[in-house]
Image (tube, rainbow, N blue to C red; front, side, top):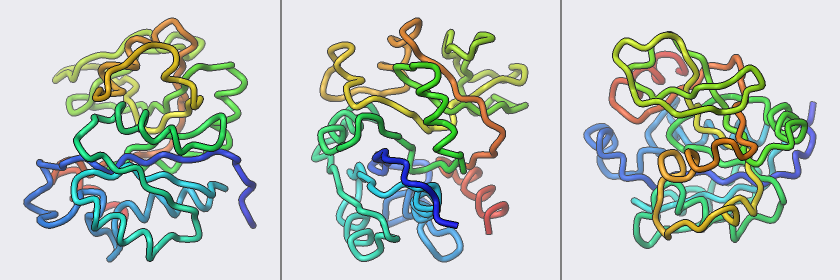
Length: 235
């Protein structure tokens, strides 16, 4: 069955240095780490395609030539454009730069080194139903020592972001998928380089900022241990 057209562009962050994974991905961007003999980023793009996405902007930076060369040849049936960082802009700066290429009023932004197989149409519906300014996918986990937490109220409004904790209780964590309006950065002035997680999102608290709670697993490959877990569970 063909997925419906979401009519939403996707921005995928794939420009990070990936220093912790450098020993295993020696001459490439970490999003190009191999999984089932294909780059990890292929997994993300394939899911976007099956969910009805059609147009993707890849934010490239470190080893940009290799990422761009591969996806010019392997578009997976998607329209792929590139927004290259000539200097590191941080996650927020990279998204802000790429927004100039977004053609839809609402778009999704995804981390390119993590995968959460969400129902994007359901997340978009929740975004619209809440009349949200921003909506981020959150996962509930039992062990939060490797992740910062996200506190929600009973209406799923985001109350705060919490630092990593060695002994924290089960809580929500950021799954690295955001539903945003392309005018989101008009809300406040931001520098050219900034983190969307640490510099921008905390300033959206109490401004129509919600979590999207889902039951899907998510994998990230930011460290050798997490990459190995992805290999074990996804291959």
